[in-house]
Image (cartoon, rainbow, N blue to C red; front, side, top):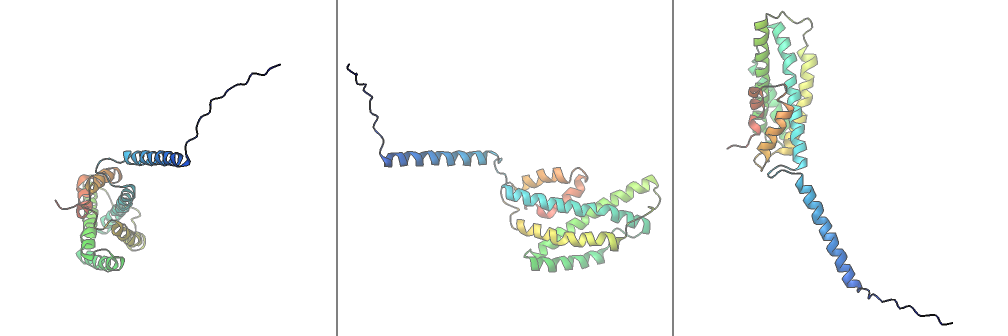
Length: 209
């Protein structure tokens, strides 16, 4: 009995150097695809995710400060105290400038920023008082105590705001900052505060034209 031999064609193996080059090429293509995928999530001229997060945190802190305007308005409605308090504002701004100097934030610029927050809060208070006068609203039954309930909240917000400002200091004129600020403020502030309040609160954050 004869067994017929079966012939299998041989396939020459590539040299190790050629295989290595092919793998390097595939890895490079994969990296490019990942970069393109990451960039696809960013709008042209938009800020990066880290900057967006810092802006969001700043705006949320600003909103927390604006939210304090309502209990302040209630307290002053009952007491009849003036909404404007230049002497107290000046004292707070001096403290803010000193804290800013220690934190690495421009003291003069921090004064302007916090003055804008004061002014935005006073717009809220005036609007509420005008509304309450029109309604003939009587004094509130349990107004908040400014010294014990309100000022401690503001005292905690001040260093937090300064830290947020430090992370964004000198970056307000970068590409996409104004658009991102407008987009985030419309989501964070616009629900509860009108245009006049928002514009005052954000005035010092806008890059000069």
